[in-house]
Image 1: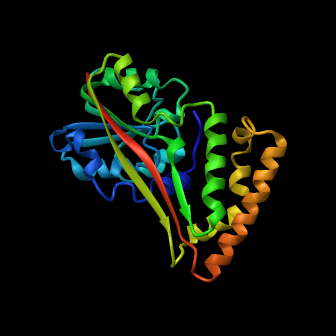
Image 2: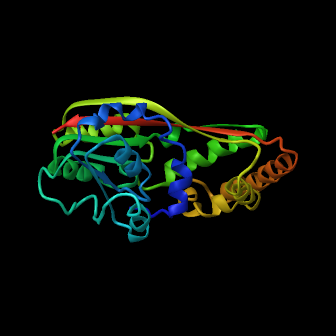
Image 3: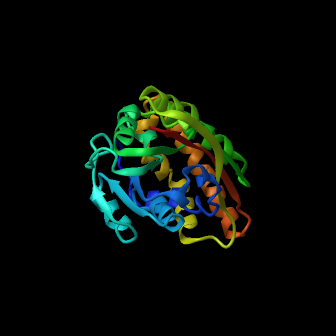
Length: 263
């Protein structure tokens, strides 16, 4: 499983749960004990704790992330493939953007079903269908090209979305499986935050691509990768120029799917 920093998780999930409608199928008002698997820094755990009177527990394999999540909910170190809980320990087991990062998502879902007495749920994006609109005309196309290369080169199914999750649920014997599609919108506009400025700097230096070089070069030739980097740096300089004039705006929309089923 790939590792992520606390800053990355907080940045990519920021604002995702401002509306709680996407969690309606989890029937949170009736839950007594909820487990958030792969909780990371606990963004979803905190929301679950606010929406249910029952106990919410977070588990993750990364102790650095658990230390952050543990400031908000009880946490237990654990591997999604070998969860450290007896059968039927929770009446809801849920994960967010976990299955897309596992080489064998069905194995994890089987564990979810083992320790749930009722409902299993997964919130998973389709990273192949992310859209970007920007006042820098080249940014949308470059983001699409980089995303295609990433999806092709990564060693897990980051485009799992709803269909892949439904199949994983059904294949391990979970019943009454249903999926709802939602969207997570992330925008950049004046006044720019420190995080926005840092992201612009990474575009101008192509550091964002360098951090994913191993994955990108799995589907791009060396020449294609260098051309993409050069165009990315040029795009980043345009972003900074527009920011200096308070003219830069960017909107990214990530489709995500909430899949539920009963054991």
